[in-house]
Length: 344
Image 1 (cartoon, rainbow, N blue to C red):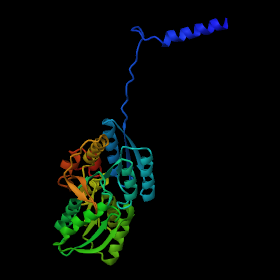
Image 2: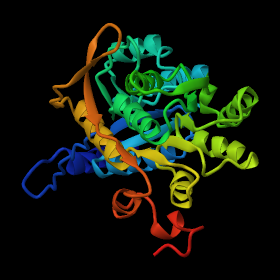
Image 3: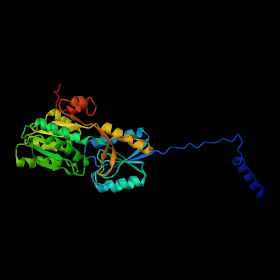
Image 4: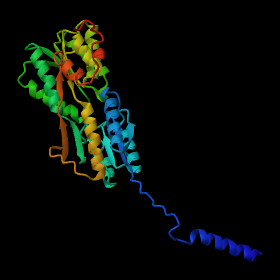
């Protein structure tokens, strides 16, 4: 009986698996294309615009079928390097870096390239790192626009303060270069200058107060971004000087736009970050797919000439606030004019 039962089982199995006539259903295995994986490493979110950059980049990349892993270094160089190493271990296709320190990532970038991972330097150039793409704005022009505002509005022989960003940010050097070029034939006295480490806004507050110890006659303040301008204007307000001193900034933060229509900040430099983030995501996906990015402009990183996508910044003041910032959809009218309800 046992032998008979065993034979029956074998016959049953063969009947199920051993036949392949036309009546047996067949199944085709669908090959699932691997998703593109992008690592996005942020310096920090201290600057207001970075969260907007992140959201637009992630949305665009996802629309193109990619997944994005976002890491925030909170201004810590070693933490950023560690996060990039994590991306390498996870075998990302592309790593996009907003560097804490433009000079500190060379070794980890080299490690990523050895793993056949593409590298995009976003907004800040990575020095001597031979990245696959650098995408940013014309940062010298940013400095030029701010310098021209001071030159045009501060009386000849007037006193100005300059508050630049950190020396670890390569863009700061470019912005300063643009500013210095304008100042060559401007008759203005730079009585106090400082670099704000890690873009800490409080440095601007201290700088204005330190300058006021030198002289109470302050005519203009160059601020490396709008966050610094916030604290510079606070110091001026405490000394009843807000509105009578020319103040510049960049990024078109909401608070800066409000100050411009209120009269306590003269101008800001608008950089269309939505366009930048969208383009960066599109280029990252192309690099991941091995497609040509067809970028002819280059910039030297200290050793190599790397492909450079350069976008144009726009100077914004009270005269073109509506046209550039509000009509362009960057800020809402109700928010910008929140404190000036009588505006017609």
